[in-house]
Length: 296
Length: 305
Image (cartoon, rainbow over all chains, first blue to last red):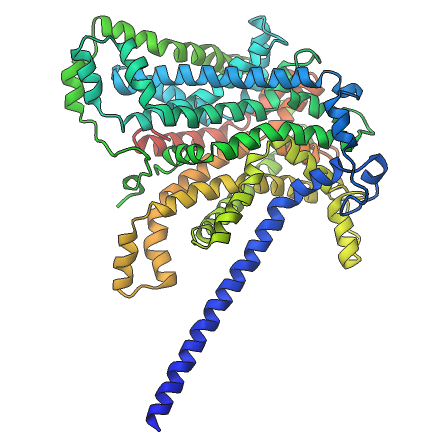
């Protein structure tokens, strides 16, 4: 009698436990589904419009009834008057992105070498300057920088955007580099010194090779920042010859009856390089983020 | 026990002893000093020409008190200030809370959790411009997917979201939350993963379960990181131009503008750059305390972000 109650009690609690676990699992699944829909809806919407023809855009359909690649063909063959210089502008975006990446990496690594390895006494000034730049919103400096670029005679020239964006990308580079640099033993520099290397040689032969993972993380960050940035591109570049894809894309909004399918096809083509880059270097990026972010 | 001790550095841990470097450089002098200065020069130049000079130029542009009188007499400016505060306070805190909770969800080790994380990152990987343009069209009252879906499934006619101030502002904030939650979730996830497992084991030996583990282990260890992230994102949100500009476009009748977009609007649409600078500078009473607090917090963790 007592044995059966014990057993049934145990069974009961086991059942209870199992039910609870299934309940948690189901709730998680539900939450997962909600996250899935929430994350993908705007992206699905982008494809929906890009794959529709002109009339279908204004039908409010939830899926493309007669999907067509026409909009992509128009973009790729530059067959619309906003897109006449599309590939040229795509090239401009690449030039800006790669230049910002290169400048950020060189300026940032040189500065962090001085502060972290050579221990310049005034190094804290540099660190604080970078910290301050990092916490000033870039959009707040847009108006004066626009004026200043004209004073420097760089108006409507790619170099103006390159310099402005390098300014905003370098502080992050300096933090990540000085953080990562701490994991490189000082003894390496010392032994190179004893062998008669000067700081420039130590920088090129020891510092840079050992910093490779951090360089990849920051390089990706700078490239993405430059490619995705809009405000400075828009203010500083205004001719079809000089503008980047971001500006060309936003131009569609100028006209009242914008061909939304062309616009979304352009948007998708513009999004592909950063997404590929992001997922390709996600491991490095994540490492960079944690290096930079999780130092509370 | 502070969060500083849970670095997620990917390299080998190494403590650079100060005495070693002192012995080496002896405070940097002679030829080394020249090298050190030369290496620091590029960044110093960039900082001088593109940060200090613009700041001084801006202060000079926005120095006339008459500008502020003009600003405060503009009703659109007051609307903008309210919008900015709502955007920064509600938007950011809502998102950080969401990100914190989601980081607890994504730490589970099921295969589909990991797969979902890859999808979840997509809004962050997508450039802002296409994403916000898509959301703009998604919310279109007549042809947008949201209202079509509402009509299809619930036979309900949704409002014209971007034609009204509160729904428009909500859309901007929502778009910003959509775009940036993944980033902060990943940061907080890394923070959670760096909490030493032994602490949880010790807690469970002491009989702590579920909620207790969360309140007494996770929360205190994550508090500092959470605070830094929130402050940092407040600064980012304050300067965010894209979501307002591309989702609601500041409309209807400039009722959903925030300071970042209003400054640009004044300067380039209405062609009064000084007023634009003044609008931006009026954010300084909010920005400066944030910046000081952040710089102190960040410097406390040894000058690294």
